Image 1 (cartoon, helix red, strand yellow):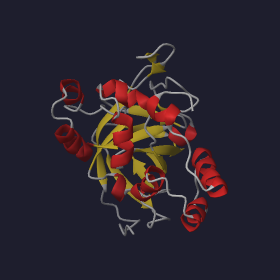
Image 2: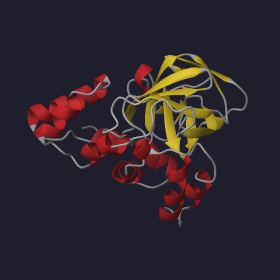
Image 3: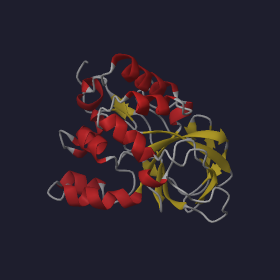
Image 4: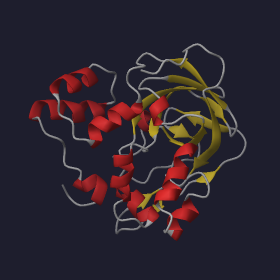
Length: 242
């Protein structure tokens, strides 16, 4: 259980970099992606669908109110640089924020220190942690590592998403203030581990389904409970039809 005081005015983290990108043709026929994002300097407006100037290549699975902003922890870059030490393309990506297509690169917090439904103040905007990221094959192509998406999933260093509760402005250097933490027993890593380990334990799934899940996760965990089996990851991780 995470016990960070929910009403402390001290920031729990800081916005190291803020990034947006335009959707462009990607590595495979018919695919598009905005994963190659660029840093923004100065205030940026944020609304219900995310940062001004940011796009998604495939709105069926990316973006929307429950995935308005993608976060990734800068502290997680170091283990990736070590794990991918012999890969020049990966090292170039990992030299600066944005390697994972994130909008917010954050100092001071990672998936083990962020809980589902946490509410944050950043700049003049208010956010809520909505879910963890389930990585897809586009990361494998970006890093030139065939199993990169699976590695990211198994590592639990996936990043997480925010929904926007109150539009406003954010900028590089803003602090992250924790306003509310209703589920301290459910850090993002705990939920990611259930997914990655294909856990179908009924009691675990029922406890998760009692949480305020986004529709995609509600469907995922409901199906596991109903069928006592995990979903097929072929399309997401490998880009193959399921």
